[in-house]
Amino acid sequence: MSPITHQLGTVGNESIVNTEDVRTSLGVRKVPKLSGNAIRHRMIRAPGAEYLIEALDLAGQLNRDTMNLLYHGGLKRVAAQLASLQRIADMQRLFPLLDLLGCCLPEDIVEGKLAAMQAMLVCSENMNRIQSIVPGDWKAGDGIANASSFVSRWQYVRGKLPKSELSETLDEGDTDDSKMMPFSGTCVMPGAVWLHGFVIGSRATQLHYGCLIHCLRRWQASGAMIGGQSSRGHGILDMQLQSCGWDQDESAAMYEQHVTDNAVECREWLLSCYEKPAKKTKKKQKELA
Image 1 (tube, rainbow, N blue to C red):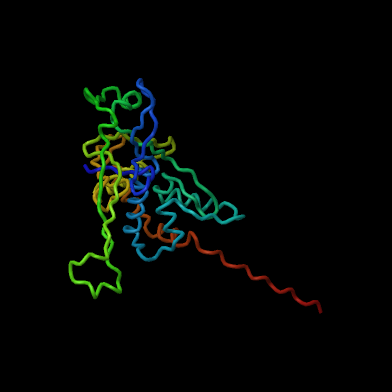
Image 2 (tube, rainbow, N blue to C red):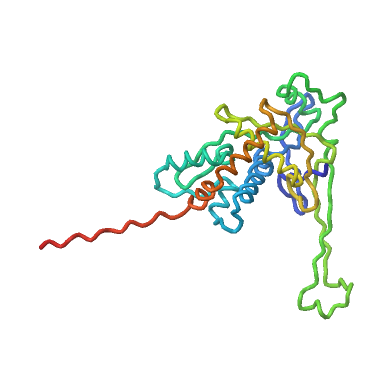
């Protein structure tokens, strides 16, 4: 729907779209891709975290560690602290989002149940891979173009405002003290099609699937952006979702009901997750008579 500027890096003032090497009959070609890590965060973890904060009325009540747990899977682990099996069991019961994606609790790292594939551009270089993983009746059509025909460029110009101490002396419209700074990069043009999938582990339930669908729908409703330059409208995708067996509407409603039914316990668990344990006071030994 808009240019995709998921970056691999920068060269000077120019950003380079993320690519991977693909071997074809004509040799190795650079083909754009969207990383699984970016997809997992933008499509699932971030909208899922925002929903929990909204549904549990947690705005302004979370500390940095708890925010990192929701938005990044947790970044802090307390050294030499034994794993709390009860805390892990409560997390898995109360938070399908954390259980689905995996997280780092204060005592231990918990494995997730979801793997996010990288998104492959539907182009001639990727067709062998695409046809090996999609359903047998899926057809991309005839005459698929090569990857280079989907890559274009973007450019903007940023103006440097006059220095504050001179702003009052300059007439309106005077730009003698300003500098125009162009910056640009490469992108995948609007109209390109991407193929992506999630692999849910065998231990996942319909509740986990409902959490996944719920997050994807919130991401789509909030703008469906991925990659860099999103403030300029880059990276908007229109998602077409294929089901894996469970009913999507029923599963998403099941997840919402689960959060509602366990709201009080979820709040208590999150707010107490990174509380420092109370210090044990040493009892004074009685003096021998």
